[in-house]
Length: 70
Image 1 (cartoon, one colour):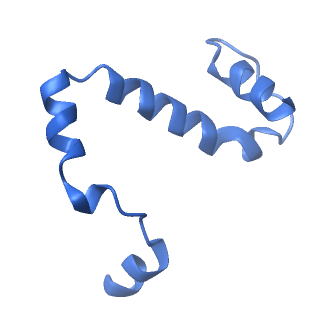
Image 2 (cartoon, one colour):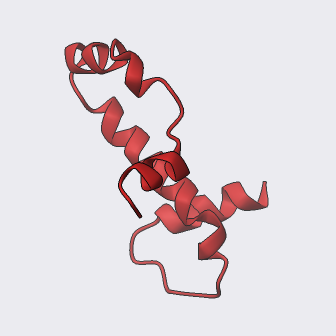
Image 3 (cartoon, rainbow, N blue to C red):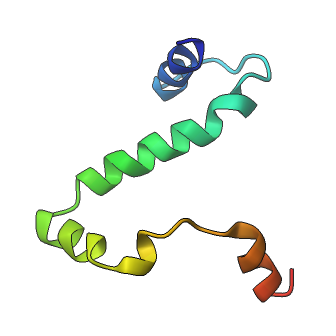
């Protein structure tokens, strides 16, 4: 519940910068904003994206970084 309240606080425009708790919730805020943008896409585009199997698999960050030589 506390994290949810913090996320709601971060989504509000013109909020003053505060303590370091943004480090905990910033990723969740990014996910919620991306989901909102996705929902604004036309239905046909969302269906096309949903049909791509590679996009349904979890992203493996370490393996991807290693493949790029990072």
